[in-house]
Length: 401
Image (cartoon, rainbow, N blue to C red; front, side, top):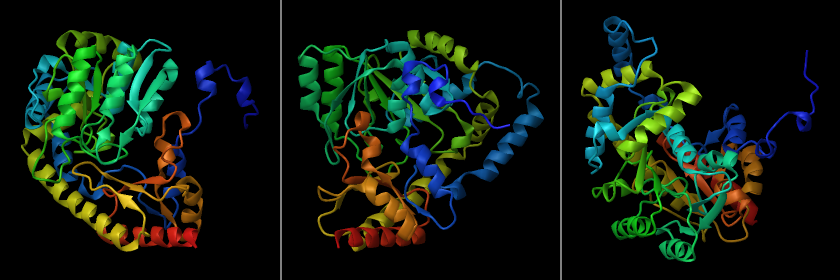
């Protein structure tokens, strides 16, 4: 029997009544259709998942660990592996500062629940990962959006001006490497100045480093957390470097915050999926991660370079784009006056090619990025990337005509 309940009659909190499907949720309906060339979602390459190594790890866990499918505490040896991973990113921390989560998204959510009062201000860039805005919605947080540039990153003069005016946000959210959606990595001087501002004004930073291990250039800068352990709360994830379905991430925070995170987390999902934690631990114990990361970086660098060459060939004059040193995304800016949200329907209908419009990353519906688009290069093989960009080029040429 079908339901006839009017959505307006559902017993929802006021903030929940205003919810609408995200651009990513909408896009999922399109990219699963036959024949669609997708440069839209930030999916890792499924063919590069370490399937055999994971299968062997899972078999060992089930054969050797009788309590693997039971409730259990998070695994100290896995936290120790995270400490070793963080050292490779230039961050010193202890296992007691590492808290395991159900992916990076939960890490951000738990930190927000600890630090954010309803209606309190949060500082973020005016082009920002849409999933973080969803974290803020239940708190009805006041967004302090500061400008960001596709080449230089967050406007630090604007950050300082907001703080000097007397605003005291609960925290600042940012990505220093593989920025989603802009694809940029902050310069060393900008990292140092941003951390100094956080320290001087006692403003915590939530640093989302989901893409920090996917780097493609010789010089790799340490994340913000390497510069300060009191005011920078680091969020990491195994989703992009192993597989998203494992749903295991971590945060690095001052040790006194860990038991508070555990208490908040227990109220939502009791504990992180400890079976997949055990599989990841067995995989890491096998010593196969480093070789897997080398393979990922080589393949994603090839796909990035293929996308950049295709953009040079097929996009019209006046368009510009970033060359990401890490991550999965290229940010494209068309001349002002273009509307990539309106163009998307035409791209899907005429050429069966998908991307995410820049407006999807605006703060509370802002249209400063209406002429932009985010393209993903990790999820398509090089030949499909070339074909997809050629299709996109034809759509843009038709629109110009």
